[in-house]
Each structure stands twice: as C-alpha cells, then as structure tokens.
Length: 158
Image 1 (cartoon, one colour):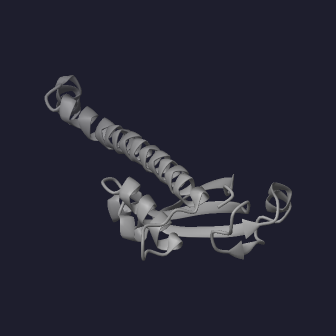
Image 2 (cartoon, one colour):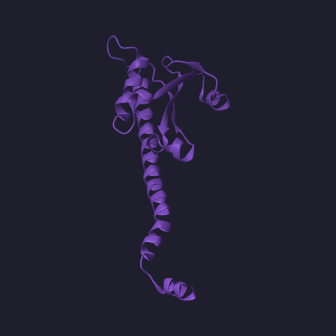
Image 3 (cartoon, one colour):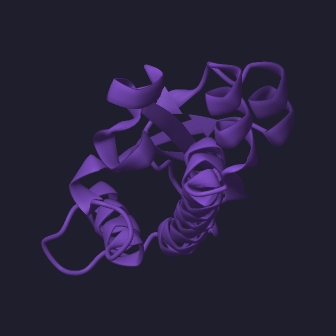
C-alpha cells in the first residue's frame, strides 16, 4: 500500500487538469464580472446622456405638431438608449418645482409635468437592468439592478 501511495505522489499526470479545475471558476467569475460591470457602466452613461438630451428638448418647450410635449421628450430618451437598452423599459418621471432650493429640500415633492416657461423641472429616467442578462437571479439571487439618472433644469421662457 505504501508503495502505491509513493507512486501516486510522484506521478504528475493530470495535475494541470486539477489546477485548472481549481482556478477556472474564479477566472470565469472575474471575467464575467468585469464584462458585466463594463456593460452596467455603459448603460448608466447612456441613460445619463439620454436624460441630458431629453432635458435639452423639454427646456425649449418645442414639440412637433400634434405631439404632446411629454411624448416627444420620452421618444427623445428612447431614441438615445436604443441599442444597448430596451427603450420600452425606460421610465421617465418629470416634476415641476418653484425653485432649485425647493427641489433640493423636498426632492419627493413637486408636481408631475414639464412645466411652463421659467419653471424648474427635475427629469429622472429609470431603467431596470437585468443582472447577467437575466441569469443574475438564478446564479446570485439578484434579479435586476435599478439604474437612475436625473437632471435639474430651468425652462426657457416660451
């Protein structure tokens, strides 16, 4: 029996397979984590850019003929996020305040809408990011991550 154990201890066949089996899960976990973090940051930046463009559209008071202003602003966001994000899952919330100070002291307040000329408006877009392409709930118990982007502006006089 002792001779068999000594023989197995000196035999190095298959040692690379065992080392790979020990290292591979950590390597793949880190690789997919870096990819997911990069995609999340790209999605967050894309949503922030879309909110900025929507606010630029809404601040002017412009709306094409026959299109409600709210619909035009939402379509601006959806056009800017298409590609990486699902435009139908973007939720836009706009609140009108009397001043930037009121916006800061009472962020949950305000009234819904885009306001009139000179109004202070808080644009907030939310997106429900499916963690690991929807497999996040199965693997880690995390179904999704909420991405939000906000921008406060004052409407031009129109």
